[in-house]
Length: 63
Picture 1 (cartoon, rainbow, N blue to C red):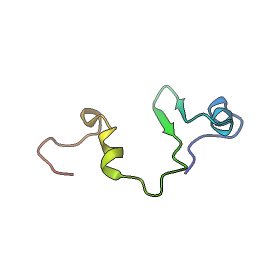
Picture 2: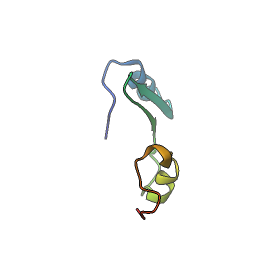
Picture 3: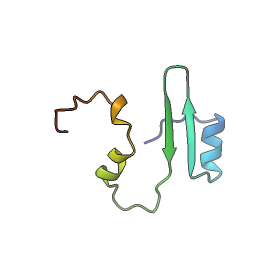
Picture 4: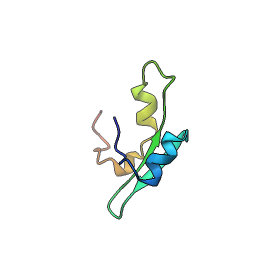
């Protein structure tokens, strides 16, 4: 998956070996972390990185 655009600074930084980069606009931002050595991503770990107060989850609802 690639949300970055060729030619942008963040794209060039990733291609040069940066382990993390940020892409941002006035409406949203995303932190991208390279995981080339991960055989399988852990969904629980990834979800723990989210700010659930901004995720739109109902506090009484199990996800």
